[in-house]
Amino acid sequence: MFNPTRRTSLRKLLVTAGALTAVALSTAPSNAAQPALRSAPADCPKGYFCGYKQANFQQLGFRYKDCYIQEIPDGMGSGGSWYNNQTPGTTTGMYNKNGTNGGWLYTTPGAPSSDAHGSWGPVWYVWNYC
Image (cartoon, rainbow, N blue to C red; front, side, top):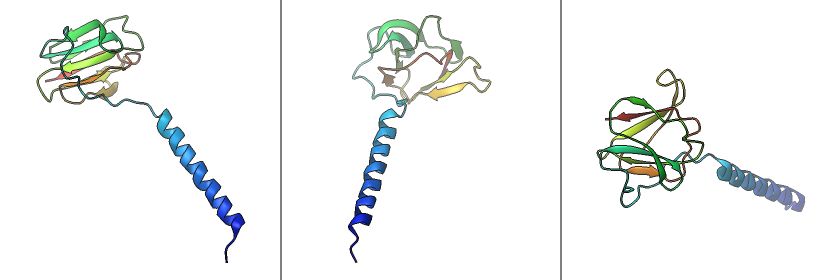
């Protein structure tokens, strides 16, 4: 037997669940790196991992080639971007103030890769895993 009240309740439940899913997806943090640019920024030569103080690869803050953990410079701020122009497939780890003592935050996709809208706020160190 058809019950219109039950059908309306089910519809409300499904609409609410869909809305909650949409909200959850729209507010989820975006840590995923963006696909690499067609070519590296001019100030990020082959073999380097480059960090920028501003979005869209503006205002170079550092470029590291060495294969060990290195502190990023003061003043990187909470925005920024990065470009991984190391040997193809090479990744870089990002660490908070605890460094390798449980401070891992993120590992980039293999080179070439980039994120035009990153955040240096929690990052204190980077480590090129070559």
